[in-house]
Image (cartoon, rainbow, N blue to C red; front, side):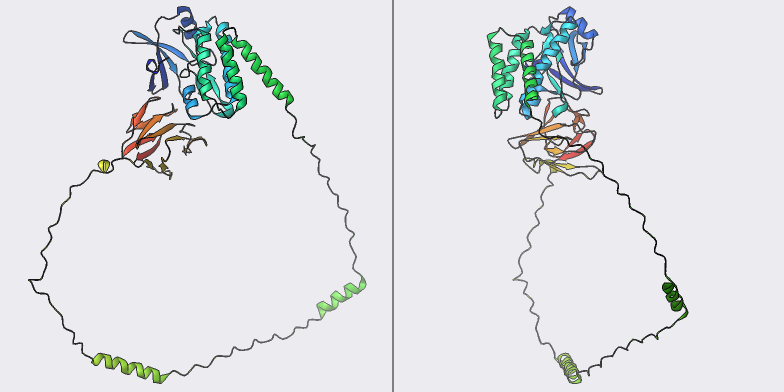
Length: 397
């Protein structure tokens, strides 16, 4: 599907993807609109200027195309994708919907979450005219270009799946079963690396009671004599500190300094002040008046820096890469630690000393001068633009 056929729009209730609905399969459309099938984007039908459109709620998810643009695809994700496609085909068949309605375009497959918590959501499109085999083959061609080529096993499995799609005599369910069997073999062959030792309970040491020693008659008599005999030694007085004798002041030296001061006062300064003649004085230079330059026009190209404007004591963001992702997650290039910021909130691309801001379908939106950006909308930044990620505000310079 061409990108021109997909329209993205952000409303107060969330972010939406709009597709046209020409030559619709009526029965499949009724079932999909009536039933909310798990693993599929929520779908509604609207009419704009007497033209029907399918609206899909894509709030908080990112497309597979965007996922592949910023991350290398691993073998685990490819296997998860193929298994999910087979499971969704079975769900459509259980709801009496044709499997050709399952759209496998990378722009129509969406992902929610990160790493191990990723969930794949698909788009059910009743107006799709391509067959399931054709769309699956195109998807495998696309995934081959996005795989991590350092992983030899992933490349081998991906090419094996692609060769089966070219031959034509294949079933996606057979591919899924082969992947599941391979997973089970890996789990069975995996050795147990660490044995968990039983936790030994600490032995409680019971201390035996100590025998009390009874005082003897001699000890009692000694204590009595010490109490009756009260002999106090006189306290020794501390020796008085010996004061040092004051040194005799050097009167001769003081007299010499006093006489020197008198001699300096009696001297008369005969220096002459020389006044320049009026003919030798230079002519005054007229003051040059420069017009005030607007701050926005001062720099020909922006520096590429986001200056924080707020009360939360956050640091500025320096854009020193061609692609700078901003978000709450640790994988982001610029991390904004706040709950209102999405994991990957927005991205700033640097192209020929120009900077372009793009929202990554964040939950709370990205704003430029109080104008909200739609998903995949690129906005060129200028000096002194006010950029707001959710409720965190910056100034671009």
